[in-house]
Length: 386
Ligand SMILES: *Cc1c(COP(=O)(O)O)cnc(C)c1O
Image (cartoon, rainbow, N blue to C red; front, side, top):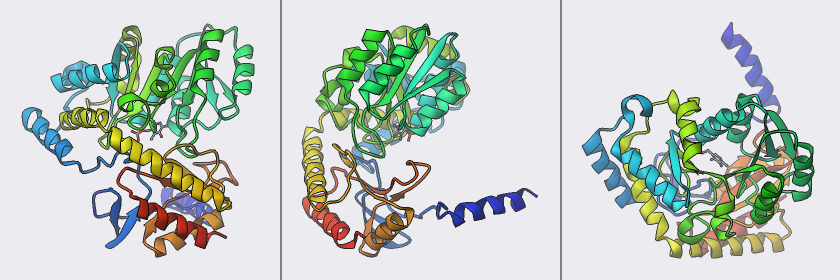
């Protein structure tokens, strides 16, 4: 019965051209990858500082595993709070210049755990950028709080929502810093100033900017010099850090509240001590990777300008995430296929990950790409566009 129902569902997805499939990769997910036995240049990963497979990180993971074992074995509150977790959280809090931090099993779980816990407080509303990440939406929905939405990165629209939410005691204003599918960023100065003006709590998800922007890779808030105005900052250890897990930083009181009320934290086993050890080493490397950040910035600028000049639509990208929006699912799929034929893997992104009519390939640059890779991909895109 179940399979009959699901088979009908899957046919429906297939008919609308939106069926998703897994691709088998048999190498480290770095700049060059092996898909089904064939070598490709990889433009799909969020491995921004090229730390995937880094030997020092691998060694740190092994050392932590040898000391603590590989599994966390119980939740942090029960018996899984190891010294390596404590050290990681202390260093992440210092990195983000906040009083305290808390690590979760993933960035997704962090957003679920933070928003569902805060949003449950009585007389709270959550104010969301329309294009916020699915994990932020899921946490928001789970909380049951009233949701208000403003137009993407539009500070006039944001202010008009703030004016309408004055009666709520807690107003949680949530945005990504760098948006994952457009590679654009929110004007963080204006955003935080508006939060202060209207007494809203600012929550900024820096999944794609941590490691890439700011002094020592502290993120976009640091680069915009508004770290102290951001109340709660969220990051992931899975992107530039190339490890696994998510984290949130804020006041000591806020972290204490999460330890007591965040179900995604309380009812989940502590992250692997090997992962925590790896993340500590990765953080150390991220901080001293200015040369990689500069390399990435230059290459991103070069690629964006070249595609823009050729008349392609790179949305409002200003970062290492560069979409080429073709609009139709068909065109996007064809472009992605043509690139694949030429040894370049760039994923096609379609509804519901992006709004309907906004299908695109999403190029994700890393410090592992060099200028000839950039020339290669841009020439191929320009030749194969429809
Ligand atoms: C990737 C991403 C997450 C989820 O992080 P994971 O560690 O991959 O679970 C959260 N927020 C944003 C904006 C992201 O892009």
